[in-house]
Every structure is written in C-alpha cells, then in structure tokens.
Amino acid sequence: MSTAEAAPPANKKAGGRGLNFDYQEYALVGVIALLVVAGTILKGDSFLSTDNLFNVLRQGSIVGVMAIGMTFVIATAGIDLSVGAMLAAAGVAGGLVVDSGSLAFMVGAILMGVALGSINGLAVAYGKVVPFIATLAMLLMARGLALWMSDKTPISLFDLDAVRWFGTGEVIGIPSSLIVFLAVAAIGWILLNRTPYGRYVVAVGGNQEAARIAGIKVRWILFSVYALSGLCVGIAAILLCGRLASASPVAGNLNELDAIAAVVIGGTSLAGGRATIVGTVLGVITFAIVFNLLTLMNLAVEIQQITKGGIILAAVLLQRRSST
Image 1: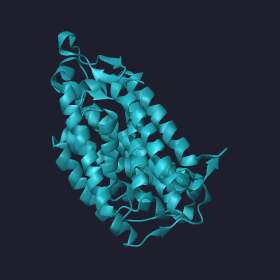
Image 2 (image 1 turned 45 degrees about the horizontal axis):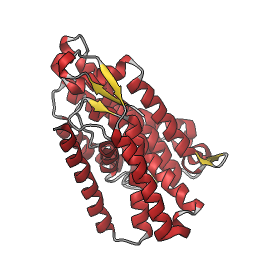
Image 3 (image 1 turned 120 degrees about the horizontal axis):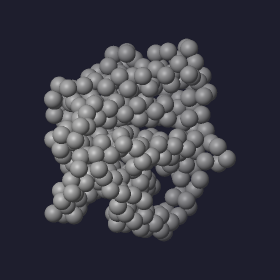
C-alpha cells in the first residue's frame, strides 16, 4: 500500500514525491474486518448471502469508479461536486443513441462525461473559478441537461445486452462491474504512483507556485484532473445504466458525497498534496459495507444520512488532527 505525497518543505522540489506506507490504510483494513464480523453476528444469513454481497460490490463499484477520478481532483486541493449529476447526463446522452447499439451508447456516455469534466477543468484552470463554485454550477447544469435531453423520462436500455452485462454480468463468478472498478483503480494507482503525471498532480496540490517555478504546467494539470474525473463518470454511467437497464435523468443523486467521503476516509488530503488510490478503494468498501448493514437493519433513510454525514465529519477531523 502506498501514498503519494508532495515533497516536504526541507528539501522541497516541485514535481517530487514520496511513497509512504500509511497507517490509515492498514486501519481501514481492520475496520472492514470488524464490519464483516459485525454483519455476520447481527445479520449473518442475509449479510453473507451471495445476492447481498454481489449487490454491495456492484453498488460500491459504481461509486468507486467515480471516487478514483475524485482522488486526482482532491489531490490538487480541488473538489468536484458535479459527478452525481454528470453521471445522469452521461447516461442520458448515451441513451439518446440507444437505437445504434451498445457501443454507441458507451461512446456517447463517455464523451459526455469527458466533455462536462473538461468544462469544469476549463473553468477552474483557465477561468480561475473556485472549484467549489465551478462544480456546483456544473451540478445544476448537468442535472438540467439530463432532464432536458430525456424529456424527464427514463430511457430503456433493455435491448442493449452488452451494456447490461457491464451492470449485472459475471466472469467466473466475479461481478463484471467489480472487475471494471478494480481495473480503473489499478490504472489510477499506476498513473498516480508510477508516472511523472502523478508526481505533477501531487506537486500542484502541495504548492502551486513551487510547481509553476519548477516548470510544471499547472493549468494543464488542473484541467486534466477534472477531465479525468469526467472520464470516470462516463465509465460509472455505463455500469449504473447497465445495472438498471435504463438511463434515468435523476440517477446519481448525492453520489458525489459518497465519492468524496470514500476518498477522504481513505486518507487523501482535502488540502491537496497527498493522495492514495489504495486508501480510496478501502474507503469505498468501508462505506458500502456500513450502509449495507444499516439497510439490512431496516434503519430509516434519515438515520443513514445522519450516519453518512457523521462519518465524513469524523474523517475530516482525523485528517486535521494528523496534519497538525
């Protein structure tokens, strides 16, 4: 397990980073083990059933793919509040060409995700708009775009067997959506930890001015992470629409909070300059199991929302405590 961090001030060189073993990642493994034990004790039959575990993995995979893109955004000290709405817009965009087949749907969804993510990137990197405001505006625009393109009606994808396979299929007993998630996570890990691009992303998040002086194209890096987030949204849209066999303009509501929470719980710093893909994957799994248990225990939705907010707040407080 490894965490990419910007170089410390004592020998600070923009573009440098270290790979550090992080106790938070190991702690999350322990938390997941405890949650599994708790689920086995409290709801053994239903929690350990194949259907339930597959449901957890499939739902977690959709949020997980978005969380990988979100990790790069947050590594630059940014935030993307629009991924949930972009998820709906990307799915509907693919649905508009449903008559052309599965490949056309997937290309349409990914292109729409990249296009909307690129608009976020242009606003933040070149328009100097604060990420919170830029992506909040995109949240509204993307949701409106999804409703407008679909005429407020879900688009059936029942005839697209390939798309449905990505949402509900299996490969030797492993959900196809989980395979896609792990593949995206592996690519993200290599990109972050084994390429100059990953070092530049972390360096920009650690200190933009130092990164600029070192010759890093800061604006390009900022633009690229939002475009990358849009690409991940397009992939997640394929998984979600395949699972539901439809493209809904109201899909993905509040998914941005799940993605952000998974990234923060995993150990990526909201202040930028520190990121971990392994931590994000563990954060996704933790979040998925927690809310599956809450659902199995028949707790009300409002209690689940309170719990979700509490977990996010606790994770941020722990980050602040460890950084001081």
